Amino acid sequence: MALSIGLVRQLATIGLATTVFVACAAPTVLDGAKVQQQIVGEFQQEAGVTVSVTCPGDQPIQQGNVFVCTAVAVDGTNLVITVTQTDNAGNVNWQITGAE
Image 1 (tube, helix red, strand yellow):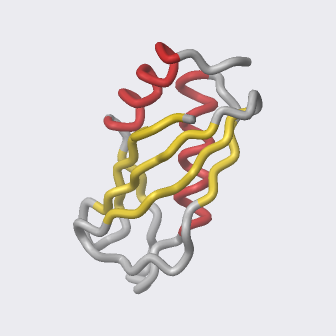
Image 2 (cartoon, one colour):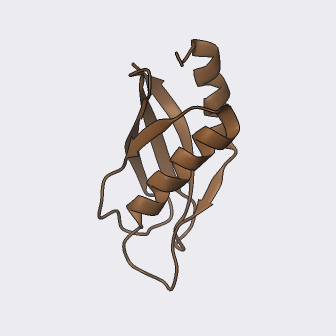
Image 3 (cartoon, one colour):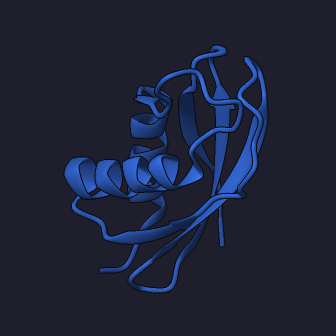
């Protein structure tokens, strides 16, 4: 499935509206694997698009912390995903901020 510019825009809207809970029992480092799994699931659920997602590890849990993940669609389209932590409990918002 090729990702059109319109679909990328649609996915960007989905990302903006999504909040993910990724932490339990007050860890000090964000669970990057859970962030990745959630983004993959939301792409599939909302747009029917299969992607693989890679996020950096060892992100401290800290409100306002911003980091970048990458997503690759099955057609080879690379997407830049910007993740922002919304609180000190591991909740995040993500959005597509670029495509290659």
